[in-house]
Image (cartoon, rainbow, N blue to C red):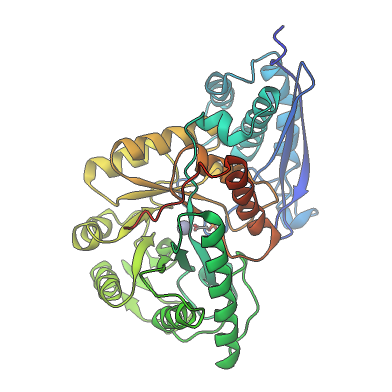
Length: 427
Ligand code: PGA
Ligand code: ZN
């Protein structure tokens, strides 16, 4: 048997950043090399995501236990992948997909499957004694992503009055990640000072951004502009702004309208929403809007793409769910111009890479992303560099499950010793 063949697979239930359980897996190869991974978990999940298997046993973790997924890894997956060459990720992932046999990975659970898929890629990189980004991206992988740093949290990620989920700053003051993340940190601290001055809370939400009871989305945007300036940077020139509306959370199917349920209870049509975004794109250095419309509102998405798609990056998260079929459909229909990439929405490394490749081939941008429920796993930092995504969304510059990814990118930049680039994708 090859020394890179899988010798054993094990798994356990561990904690995510919200204190709920998730899945951790370790793959060991014949030569003793190991790879480990932890699976993240979303709160504002898309309707079409692969299935996250939960135990449903109300006696444990409020029904959110992951022992079934762990058991599936140990009892069902481990025997099937034993002896498989970890260096052949594609064939391994196909094997996992076939073993599950369902469209949404509902038999074994996408959390079980991804744990093994990702752990195997780490084991393969360790076997070759190279970093994960190099194993997946090759010698030419040297583009560091610009971070989309979520400094104000709302929506399903915070117990405040803000309907929109994420207000992000996009630092592009330099062509190094090292300087861009410093800039983000300085703006974050200026924002803290500003919120305090306004008598607003500086407590944080699930992704480490502040979660104040700020009056409206425009008040949040104004606070960002003020803080960018206070920190000594020029809005637009040095730091841009990105939003994740997570509009599927606002959409009311019966009414066919977007309802600001956490604040004013105002109702908006898709056309109203698009008009609002168009106005903001003129007033603010707004370069990217994610999930500005509901995941099933393709007409709304088309309108947004026609009206502002030429000037603003329109990112499909719940819309595409890292799924090549949904993305291909969107490309055919001319919907959106970028895709958010979340490994656990689809459930294997191979399918994730396929989604990125399909996007890039068709002139769509890709944004590598964490979930609101995260762990110390830093795989997405490596994947962003490996695939040349150019952008990463991994929360604020506090909470260690967020900074772990930024710190890994700083490590990669240091490892590349001057040959890396970190360019503003919005020039
Ligand atoms: P989620 O949020 O992980 O709760 O889905 C992240 C996002 O919507 O981008
Ligand atoms: Zn999103």
